[in-house]
Image (cartoon, rainbow, N blue to C red):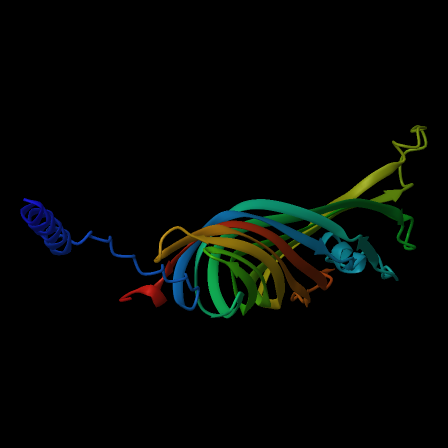
Length: 307
């Protein structure tokens, strides 16, 4: 009996070992590690935001030839003398700022080296800004001929308009996973349309030559006539300067990123000349232009397409 008992115990243990060996425990597969995100590659995008355009109008002189104006009301040369001097109106420098919406597009290429990112970018934006300067002055005095005096009202206006700006430059950034901080800078361009308007409104008077019964000083002066001279001229150019700024981008997916960027653009200064003729000569005007831009940007990461 003891032998039979040992036999059955051995058989049961052998069967249990066989069942255990035939049903191995399943182990879940380990997923491969996620591939780190890279900012390298070509991208294309658009931007919208706001721009503050700052314009400095330099001081300039406008010359009014009083003798030429006087000849208009004295075509028969009844007065033998000429007015021996010109009027010079000096318009002081002025500054003005205009705010406007801005929108455009950009294209660039980035290369990531560890956490550092370098790249180049160029773009064009549309932004219509208008800055104006106005100056009003008066002058009066003796013409030094035959008791003739004058009284001149002078008005001068300058208008600067821009419709677009463009840039091309480099980027240097630091990437932390899907977040990119960067600084940017390079060359900036913008169109500048300058319009001038100068007007000299002169009235000439002569004292004396009235009946002796007239006693008030005002009645002793008679008007010889009024001459209004105005000039309006446009000028335009593309001013070139530099820009610098920075921003951040976040990769929402492997193909789309979004972020904010600020940049300061200095488009330099230029002196604009205007054609003139007697009796009014418009002075050369120096225009200095810069802007501050804040934009929301969205980029399509073309370098990730097909991966």
